[in-house]
Amino acid sequence: MALSPVITATLNNNGQTMTVVEATGVYDATTNTGGWETPNIAGSDVVTATITITYADGSTQVEDVTAQIPATVTGTFTFTDITLSGYQDGITVIRYEIETVSTTYAYDLTLLFSCNVRACIDKMWADVACQTCSGSCDVGSLIDDANLAEALYNAMGSAGACGNSTYVNKILESLMNLCNWENCNC
Image (cartoon, rainbow, N blue to C red; front, side):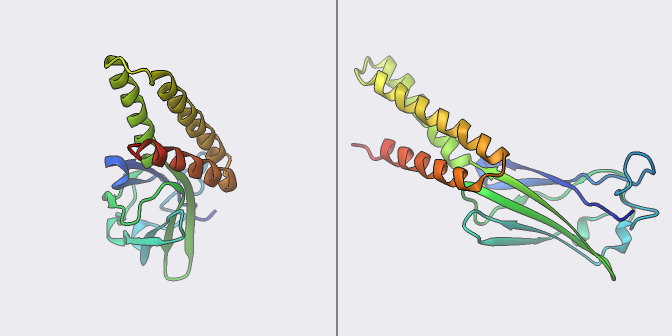
């Protein structure tokens, strides 16, 4: 069996940084035949290793992580947090690529980034609370807008979980329009 690399990733700091965990694990003849070390490759066999982030607009960010792969892999490990240079909401593909002298191994992780619209929806709910406390007559309308945004956000998450980029993009556009309308200070 050959190495079958696996990573996981999480966003931090409101989408400013990303933590990537190398989750391939160590070879085991029964439970992890795609793991690191004998009979597969060792960390010391790696010539280059990169993480390429392809944002929703197609722009890319490449991070060299070669020096972070231990010579002998003993389990999962975490790469240094990556500062995201082109963060935007939408479907993002994170490609983890490892090269030895003779072979390239790769793994693609697809994630739905949504920090900006989530922050907008949270702001809508905060506005509901503030307007309720001040006795505003618009509270019902504000709640309707916040509920609509919340429903769209949940639908976008479902579409993202299914890998349906067409629906994700349509729903994300609707959410951004709703957020822009809410932020227009009319």
